Image (tube, rainbow, N blue to C red; front, side, top):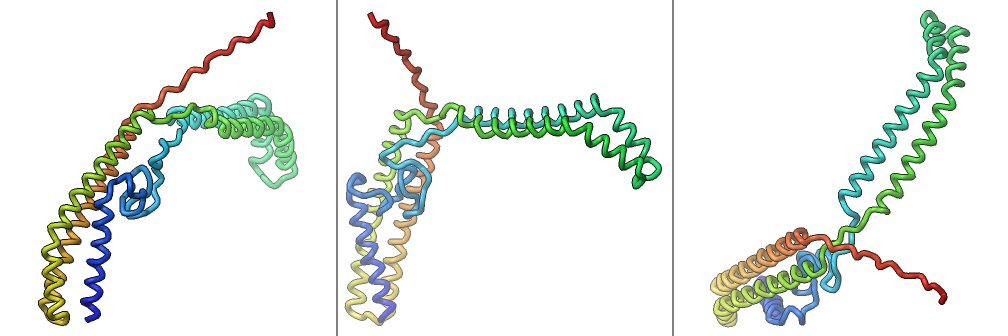
Length: 256
């Protein structure tokens, strides 16, 4: 008996879902009875990072500009390293030779230690210059991306994608409603069978048949709505970048 009640509860909940589907899209909040697509909540209310129906995608830095910043930082660090090596070779070549001569036989000798000390003193300015150059590179790495222009999809194109997505989702809901309606006869048969003999095998079989029909409709609707979401994402990705308005120069008053 408990098993029959649980199955009947499933159909009660599903019937409520069908009533929600029959309402217009504008009357249903995104994320409640609706996949939401790329405009609000994701699949079955899961979080989605895409823009809401009331907004457009937030502006993102131009990808090519960001890549140029990364390459410039890499070149900056490489240049700093080359400059350090050049400095060491040009100003401390004699000290490096002295280290090789003094340390060839015994690296623990006083002469070797003295030669190393002289070399470190000579290299100190080169290393200081290298550290300063690296700090300059790191500072530029932080500030460069902030100067990149924004790359925002054209708002008219995004609006068209939104309209298409809403129409697609509405069509999926309407199709699902028709599918659910086709299951009504099976639901009625289950109600009659269970009303006569709730504990009988006929009741259980009728409930399972109706439930299978209902679940197929739900799966078809979910697949259709997911297709709508993917199409919307592809539509936004294909939108051209919004043109950046050119500032209008303001004329200074002459005071006359």
